[in-house]
Length: 324
Image 1 (cartoon, one colour):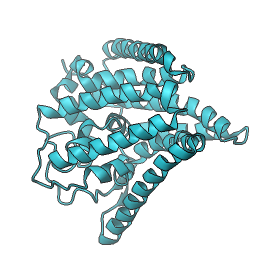
Image 2 (image 1 turned 45 degrees about the vertical axis):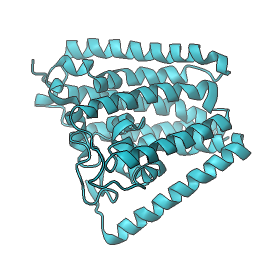
Image 3 (image 1 turned 60 degrees about the vertical axis):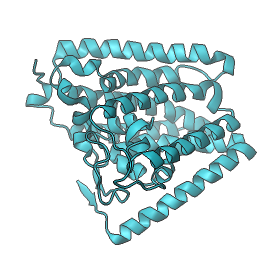
């Protein structure tokens, strides 16, 4: 695994990248108000499609520069704010998943074409990140708590392809008692699942439900066209139906095959990512007027990365044995 340690020079680089990230966010908000069509296209067809692949390589690449994380840590309640204990970690995680389920489908009937609504939502989340940073220690309130992107980072970032340092949390104050994705990516998932990972009980926990439903959630989103605000009900129904079908299939496969929680979630992450890039490749290529062969190139690159990620996992022995 390639290593990118945190040195004084790399810390300076990360700090510069964080400032640039905040500046770009301010520019995005201005663009969404002044030139919404261009700004939304740059966001949804330029920046966002890169993030899932970045999470697969290492979620810390994004978490180190995320502008919301920078704002969340501005109050810098290092060791003086409230942390997330074992009781609050799953509560915060469930809130983040609910926010994700609420916001992503809203792209179809609101955020994909309404720059003002998107700008106000981003600004509102930014204010929330700062406010939580004033109450909670370090990243506990937002970044490692209710952030709606965190469940996806945890799903794709189970086994990063490289090692990336964490310049934000130095020193670590253990602001969350378990499941910190910044402290140990390979242990985060197991810590969130807890003892339930040793049986089929993981499928009843908040994160197990998310992971099992996510491939269908992604497919449901892409099978739903953009529409007016009045189509919100049908959008949530379609995406929700996809998630339910995905969960049902996962339940059946897990129970019939005996695959472990870790192995199943690894496959679910790969399937969700494959579905995402299968559809996103065509959408991005069309919206950005790329060459006719661009969708095939994007899919080939994405699937190569996914297969590499899957191939790193040890599928032998205990990885396929569930203890009852």
